[in-house]
Image 1 (cartoon, rainbow, N blue to C red):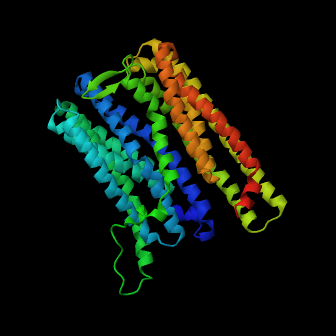
Image 2: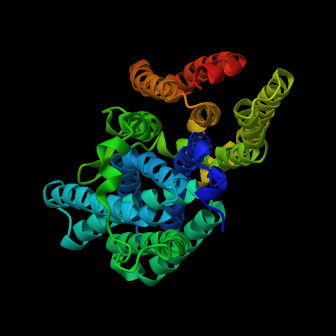
Image 3: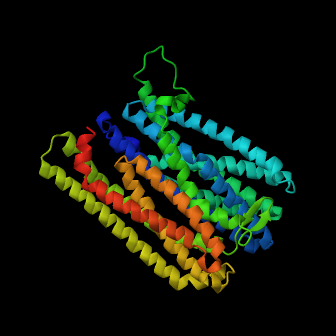
Length: 470
């Protein structure tokens, strides 16, 4: 089983390189996993068809679950990269036994925060709903928060197969549970979702504890006889010396950037409709956006694999040449290989995005018809797939900034995207339906252009900046 120690190569002098790789991968995958969650929610909602449940109940379930996904991502965002960075640092120090106690401490904090926030919402935000609905929403919110922490941690371990299996098994169980609980209406669908999330969390947690638990026991062999057994909790993860405010800010900006336009469409008077309690949805915006994001998932995966297979190797060669006193020709050759890997990776992403866009352009009308959407939303689907594709390019570019340890640029670009997405989406809402979707697309285009220009300049000055930071 591969984990962060593979990235770190077990050497302290490579701590920075391995750590950047760890949370670089983690950030990319954490931003794509929510699309898989939305696909699972859609699957459960579609299963109402053979059960004879009213369509209104399926919509209420989907809106409830999507809000749980969005809220849990925003709540846990600041902790995700922080935890992966902490774990990578402890592994580089040879203190693998400290990883699980830190993870448990973060889990305890997440449980308390999500529990208190969820309980407050359950008591005061849904006065007309049943007690069972409120309890399931609370349970689902807490579970989803833990799922994102576990998924990000697994991605830092590079256990992508484990993540995919956990999602597939979790939502397969949820689908079967939805059929079994069809007699309970909305609460049955929501209960099936909670069961699926519980299975998903177990599937993500088991490989984490199996691997790091064995590491902790191995480290424990070297202790003195009087030492205690490994601790269950360690709040060292929250110590001042282990705080990474920039990473916490980046972790919050990612989900805010993704959901900013959707929240505005949900709660705008002209595009949103109340569905259940205080929760809204946008009939005209939600389906095209979801289809667009689903279409670009393969591009996310391909870029992650391309970076892992080629860019990391050239980056390691560059670092070895610099630290080992290599010749200028060797250093420049490694730098040039990195640049070629970046260009080829971005080229493959753009190529896959173009294919996805063409397929969606060709199949957009029948796909929208499956969801009962009129042909008037077809232009919105086209705009959304372009916007989602541009955002994938942005994520790919930002992952490269992680490797170069340019957290300030990542933070500024993330903040710029959130601000532009909010402002331009609000402008398009005022301009009318013909402009819907352009806010997100233009925000992504502007930030992608800036990010690529800055990245090109950064790579050109890489040797100079690397030596200056030694």
